Amino acid sequence: MKKDYDEPDTANVDPALTVNRTIAQIRASVVGTAPIEITDDYIIAGVVVADDESGTFYKQMIIQDSTAGIAINLDISNFNSDYPIGRRVFVKLKGLYVANDGDNNYEIGVKDNGEIGRIPAALVSQYLFKGQWGLQVPPITVSLSTLNTNGRDYTQRLIRLPEVEFSSADAGVAYGGDPNSTFDNNRTVEDCSSPTNSAILYTSSFANFANALTPTGKGTMDAIYNIYNADA
Image (cartoon, rainbow, N blue to C red; front, top):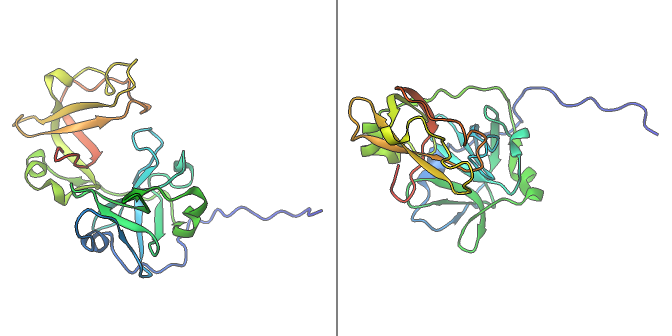
């Protein structure tokens, strides 16, 4: 019987992998909306800026490098224990697929009936490699006016909106709407000086903050930016 046990690996270091593509380069390689198989030995790395801990993102993580962000679909629940916000993740892309959903949101995963599916749990360790944790990704400060005109340049990135507020109808109410509802909810965020510039704040009904009340004053908001059916 073995009496001496291996020490757990607690070193906060990156794996010995060489990154040879940026996320922006992978996004730029996609033509159209059909999934494209990656057949070259490409490796990207990015820091997790969205995980599934809060319940807003389900089986999908967002990673971001200095050039862009991208989603990775995983068939794993509570993956935040291994891939929390602030951890660098290296991805071996060969054999995976990438696609643009038509709104400039990009996803990596397996091919599933002509769409991007989730990487099976048993295969995740073949493609994803854990790097340093506790890293900070500074949000990109951008105005709602800029998002309304050039939002496709900021999809799947951590952004900061200064001088914004919830619309009068959406201030001081639950983020997730009716607490008894199982439907997701949208709230409108407006530019304090120009309410015609606005964006939609999406909250899953499963989010752990769904019953919290939205602020009633103005301030700064950090968020992951996506476009859904042409709506920001």
